[in-house]
Length: 253
Image 1 (tube, rainbow, N blue to C red):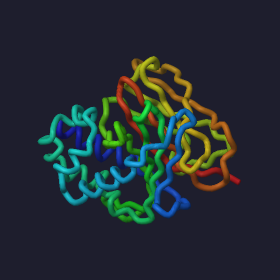
Image 2: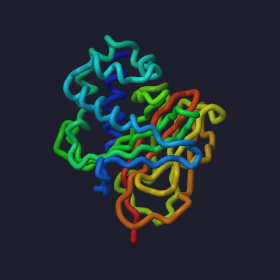
Image 3: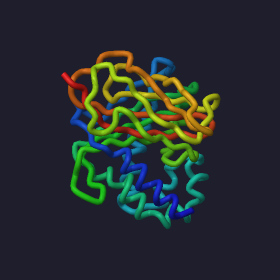
Image 4: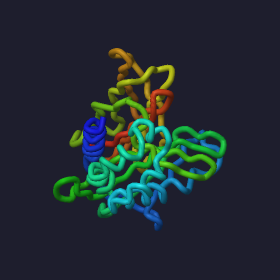
């Protein structure tokens, strides 16, 4: 159990951290982009909570970091003692973002529920993950209830793989995007695609079954993207869990 958690931690963060581009920041160093279905303002506690959680991980403050984790992820982790025993893996993975250079956050609400919301925070910046600083991107699910946000880094056993366009790909201005999502059922989980800093809200992808509880999610981006680097975030939300991943790609001129 512990070794599998360690593997998922390092694998998920390393896979999500593929490199990013410097993006314009508002003075607070964060961007909040809400889905059109959101009623009211996006949860303002989300990004400050993520920042505190990253700092607690990097500083080895396991108890404080644990308190900021949603119950759904706590169940997957298996309790505080399991979390504490893997503190070094958490610090080397997500915790590395506490010291990221030119770090930026963007919040996207994907499931508004009255005064509550499930959202994804996409992070970009220059991060050192067991090596030199490099441009990277990562996506972290968060839950907000009654104004209180918890991070949700390990909710469920679903996995997002094979995101296209992938790191280093150069595509046209209206690319066809795809990802393989394992461990879900189409009737219980929705897959969203979102491009960082785009005015397009998180958009549902079409799901085609390609195996047992395995689907290929596809979407042709609805608007033309500007030439240059972009960050694509893919999130799956629903009864099988809540996971997100992010990659960097380039749009040709």
